[in-house]
Length: 146
Image 1 (spheres, rainbow, N blue to C red):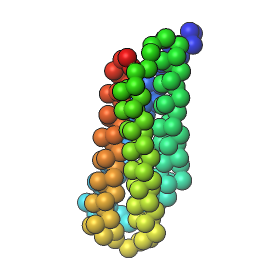
Image 2: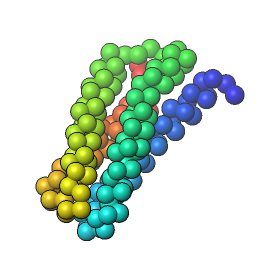
Image 3: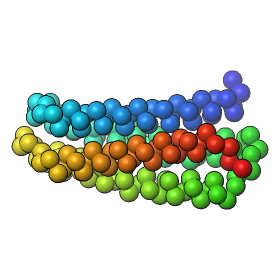
């Protein structure tokens, strides 16, 4: 298989898996807000913080590397506006991801106690903002960097 095609497939798959993973976590937050079983929710939160969030972070951090590699192999010039927009979006994504991880850690620390509505709202808002930034990054990935 040609290296350009392989990197392009891996880059697209990482972006899609990242968005699908975040949507699954948003669904979990929404379901938890509806009053799911507390013990099952604590297991899900533990698994999320231990496995899912590091994998999603790794996928997110691989996007700029594989994106640069694709642009380099294609020979496209990187415009200053494209570089500025992509760096600002990734700079916004990092603190939002950390804030979401902090809210999930606070939620897990509650144990079997029901989570306050404010904690659920903040976790949901951070997850939604991360999703919006990821969609903007994907739109920028689809735009030709010239």
